[in-house]
Length: 213
Length: 213
DNA sequence: TAGATTGTTAATCGATTAACAATC
DNA sequence: TAGATTGTTAATCGATTAACAATC
Image 1 (cartoon, rainbow over the protein chains, first blue to last red):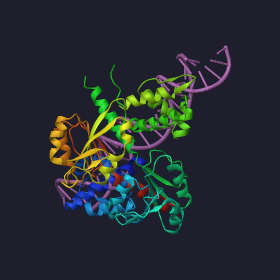
Image 2 (cartoon, rainbow over the protein chains, first blue to last red):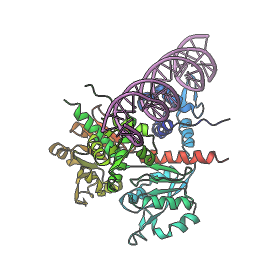
Image 3 (tube, protein in one colour):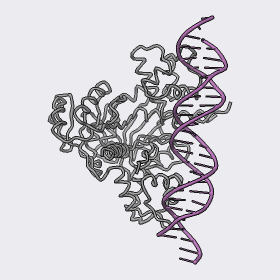
Image 4 (tube, each protein chain N blue to C red):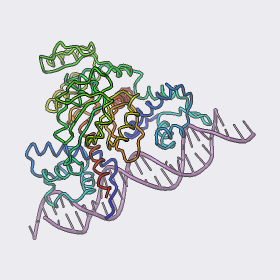
C-alpha cells in the first residue's frame, strides 16, 4: 500500500502527454499504441509505458491505449478534475495578460481577483475581473477560498508578499518574479522565469555558432 | 581538443547561477565559496563545482570564486555578451506584455518589431516598437538581421509561421504557443508552455492533499 | 606554513532504454 | 488461435554526490 514516489522527470512529462492526447481526441482518434505515440512525441515507447505505469495500467495488451480514457485519467492525475481559485498579485502587463487568458478556466483555474499596489489601477476590470488594492488582500484571501496566488510583481516585493500569502492560507504559488521564494515545505511553488528561459535560448544559439568553424 | 558535450541539466542550471551571482554582485560581495553558494541556492557544493568545471576552472583553491569574474564568465557562456535582434509574432496580451518588458534589453535582447494578422493592430506602437502586418514579415526578416522570433500567437498558426520564419533565416524561436514545433535540427526552440506549468502546480497541490489522510 | 577550498576522480544513485513474458 | 502490444524486470546509461589530492 505504500505510495511510490513519482520522480520530477515524470511529472514534467505528464502535461505534455495530456496535451498530445487532447490533440488526438480532437481528431477523433480512438486508440493509440505506445509506439505510435512515441513517434509523434519523439520519445521512446518504453519511456511512455514506464511513465504511465507509475500510476496504473491504463492500456491493454494487443490493443494499446484508449485515447479518451487515458486523457481523462492523466487529467485526474494532474488534478484537472478539481477546480482552483486564483488571485493575481501585480496588475502590470504580465498580470493583465494572464488575466486575459481565458483558457485557464477551461482547465479549472478561476481567476477571482487581481491586486496591485498602485491606487490608479484599483477599480479597473480585466475581462470582468476586478483590480483591488493590495491592502485588501489579507482580508480577501482569508474570507475567500483561494488556492493559488500568481505573482506577477517586481522581484523586490515578491518574497515578502509570498510569505504573507502563505501565512494567510495560500497553498500554491505560481511565481513569475525573477527570484526564488524560500517558503515552508508544504507550500508548492512553480516558477516561470522568463529571463532564464531566454538565456537558455541564447546559450544554445551561441553553442551552435561556435561549432560552425 | 574535443568539445565535451554539456548536459541539458547543466544548461538548465546556468541561468540560475547567473542570477545568484548578479544578486551577490549588487550586494558588493567580492568572493564566494562553492559551499556558501550551495547553502544559498540549496544545491550541493559538489554540483556547483562540477557544473562550473564543465567550462573551465574559474575558482582558486583556498579562496573560492571571485563573484564579478564568475558572473561575467557565466554571462559569456550564456552568450549574454552578444546582442540579439528579436521580433514578436502575435500582438495579443502576451506579446504586448513581453514587448513592454524592458529588462530583456539589459541582457542584449532587442525587440525590433511586432507582427500581427489583425489590421486593427497595425500602426500601434508598444514602448516605441511598431506593430506591422504579418504580410510584411517575410521582407522584414530578410532585410533585417533578426536572430530570434517570439511566438505569441494562437496554437493553430504557430507551426506554419515557425517553418516560414526558419526558411527566411531565423535561427532561434521562443515559443509561447501551446504546441510543439517540429523544425530542422539546427533551429533552436525554447518553449514556454504556461498551461503545462500550471498543470504541474496543480499536480503537486493534489499530491499533497492526497497524503493528508 | 597551516587552513581553506578548489578541481577531479571514484562511488552512488536514479532515470532511461532494452528485452521479453504475460495477456488481450 | 496468432499477432500485437502491454506491463515489468533487467541492463545500461548518465547525473549527482562523496572523497581527497592538489594548490592557493
